[in-house]
Image (cartoon, rainbow, N blue to C red):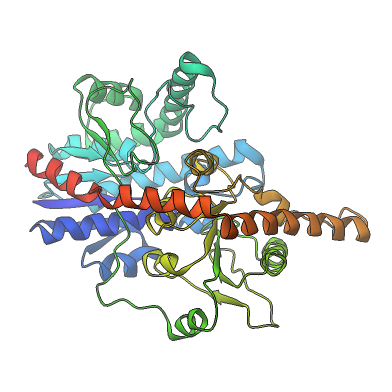
Length: 437
């Protein structure tokens, strides 16, 4: 089959589909992956054809779906405006990436509300492959609305409301795309309801070891296990990092991925890096600091903290004492897969949900507020600003110390790793694809 995978957003929204695509390619399918041009090399390294989608997520066009900082100028209204503009641009991009002759569309959560219409126009099937459990359930509230349960009825009602908000966000983009494709008018909500009525499968790239499948989900909604970013069989860590790992005890990894994007100019990145460095040293551990989209950099002095760029988590995390991260879905799963204790520092969207799940299974400490590590102390007195910074660093240091030294965290993470190792998320997708064929 000629398969197109369409994914849009940050690195964590795209990278898992490279491993899935490689698995499908190994099974004999012809696979292309459509994403922003920033990920062209990532896609091609997995042996997949790359097709470009519009809108660079680093410009913040994707709004909440790409993890834009909660303090984005203009607040939520501006965030929604940018997200709607991104959607209207994304629809024609997906259509252009799926030429006649395509046999199947595999769609991420961001691309599915648009890609379904492209599949309808082509007369081919599509399969939704989200990385979050986004169907309404009484078991927990919507993953993007926080962690406070509203009770079974309230959680389901909030889940349905969340879907309606997404429908409104995509409404203009769907209307324009259907007109472009020569399809009769139909709302995003109508298409979604039709797909639910015929019980089409939705395979979530989520480990049921971390999130048990809700008992009130309809048939066809499944948590099949993660699919992982492609890592070449001969991939190795950079020599500088290997030397650092060999020079002392296992370090603590610290990385926030796409969070704090755009923070280079307002001083947030420098404050964040300074607080992280102080926390690592107060905890008495060595650290590997990933620069990420914010361009974080460790201190100029000392040999106890190394700054790195993009590094395969599968190679590094098993060699760490703990992982401090923003609790994105992919990084959360990668740390668990490695059996590494976590210190979650959630920022927005689904990250508080994953942070709460880590604490619930005992594999992570309680969350450390990102805002406290990145906050601006300029409105305080010099003494007050210094005190605020010390407080943030102390809180992170305390969490790191517990994650590294209290064995219960590693035992829980190791137990989860064994269960995840027995899962085959990509294999479940391959089986579903071949059933469609």
